[in-house]
Length: 162
Length: 162
Image (cartoon, rainbow over all chains, first blue to last red):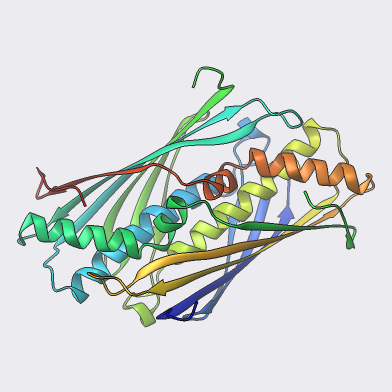
């Protein structure tokens, strides 16, 4: 906590709209301020109305976008020439039986291909991409088991923790 | 692998556009098919042009949207009456010093408040939300340390792994 260079603090509030559409109001508190709404939905396959992208598309866009941004931002900071970057990510999950619900979600793995167009030494580009991975808030989140705390209220009253 | 009820397989291909804008083409391969493009950008604070939401907004929308969707979908499957759902998520990261790059991203934690409007027994709602957490592909991804493999090419040629 004490040796942090800066803090990043976001909050997101989702409300239900339509069959499976969610409208999520996002607020960035630190290190910059922004407020925005993004909507998710599901296709007819899942009982949605296909009015917006699915949650997993948002999730993967966050991962790929964050890594690409850090590669470009860190390239300037580290003075590594980068003309272009392409990132491809393949993400797999499995659904397994659950004692209560219809299934459990189980992540299988994430494969990321990075192609950089650059006049720099490839070893230096590799060093840059390594630094960008460590600087990518999303990749670092996926790399560790995170503390996720839940608090449940039913009709506004405290309920047993889920 | 063998006892999976179904597989989920998505891919995402990001290309650079503008100063820090990324255009990410998403393909859902299983269990349904969809293709879509979502763009990320950064505000002027980070050197972007603010043409699209930031990666962390996409990431959190994926988390909140996935959990909310599973609560509603599983409520039907488990026959728990759910009239409305609101989810608030507070997410914190810190930036710490790095030997090479400007900083490392370090996740601090995720706090999720779920409020369900329901005529059902609160214990039953808690059971539902617990099942939805286990069924939420994004929350399950954040709960474990995931395998993330990287493959780097520079100008199309193999480069040292980052």
